[in-house]
Length: 92
Image (cartoon, rainbow, N blue to C red; front, side):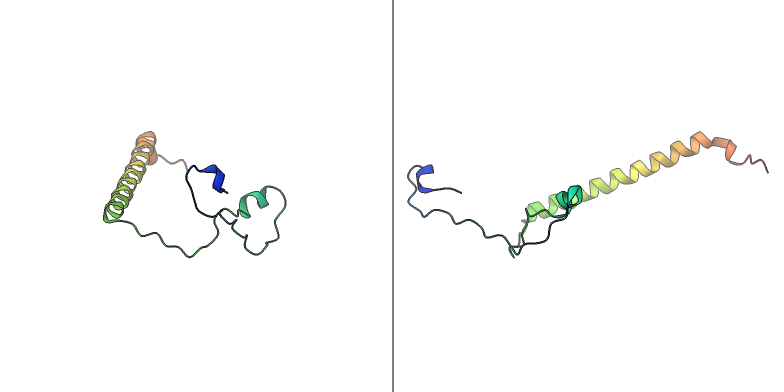
């Protein structure tokens, strides 16, 4: 929280503390630490991306898809080379 004396030349009012949402029963232990995060409270605000941000998101998604596809192909090729011709040799 910022007060008037903390910023030189500021003539505004002190900020009000955000009131927490309704109290939720917290879970004990590690589960509570992970599942009961109160950092992101719904405010109703929406973020609209610019055209450049939308294009960058699409490009990033395409590169991630291409990298994932290449990884799958690499694993397939390495598996087939390790198995080699032995895939047809089966002891019954």
